[in-house]
Image (cartoon, rainbow, N blue to C red; front, top):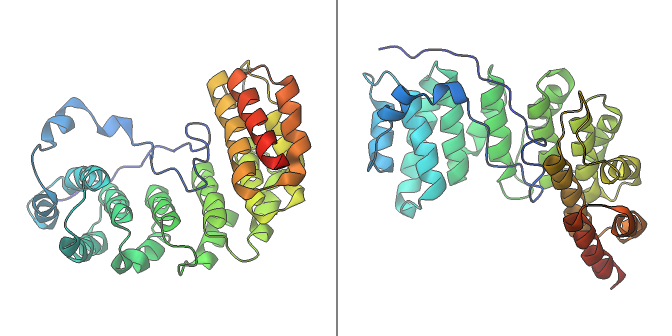
Amino acid sequence: MSEEKTSPAPKKILEKSPLSGIAVPVAIVLVGALIIFGVTKMLSTGKNHRDLVSELNSKTFGNRWVAAYELSKYLASSRIPESDVPWVAENLGQVYDTSVDARTRHFVVKALGMLAHPLSFDLFNRALRDADPEVQFSAVVALGGLPAGAKIDWEQLEKILNTSDDEGLKQAILYLIATQRKENGQQLLRPFLASQQRMLRYAASMSLLYYSDNAATPVLKEILELGYEAKAGEGLNGAQTEALKLNVLVHIEKAGRKELISLVEERVQKDSNIRVSTKAQELVNLLKN
């Protein structure tokens, strides 16, 4: 039975889970339409990683992506024996290379990202050239989990930044640049400070915090001065605005940017959100020490 092709829905990063711990958020917005009652009934219970890999390798298993999806969930919540990791990585690599279904490749890359095994590092870079942006997104997330200084195809990532219309994918790449502390990464990040797409602008500003780049200061100030009442067409509610502000404060702290203390002190005095003003006060105390 052949695999079916479908187009994935676009994902949002900053609006749903803003820059958590500077690593790209692992929680990817899955395509809700795929997880319908009939499909949910297909998801097995009690199967281990070897069972699921066997299903993926079965030529008669028409919905391989279901097993790939379940395996990605399994690996996210369960530790498999260390001795099994190379076997799983090798088999999933073969599934990726032979699958015509983008959903299967997407969840395979996601599962391999949970393992973060060196056998899969080259596959993550290959997946950056996948025709499907959801697969590319999963590859960027996986690369964000690699050790700092890992070999990454920056040339392809820069090409995606320059040509892709997928805002979520581009946000993920901006975070990856900061996560990996790419040499001269600020040169890739700075142009996005002037982006007409607000979330790209915000992602670039928070990523630049780790390069001690003062060019990001006006955009950081823009975020911290956002109001909490949603305005028509802006797409941010109060909770999302709060999350953005808290993330800015968290990353100022992580980056040790003491020169930004005046921005933080202003939030202590003016911010109407008690959680934001409290975090700002804690940060002021830390930055003064």
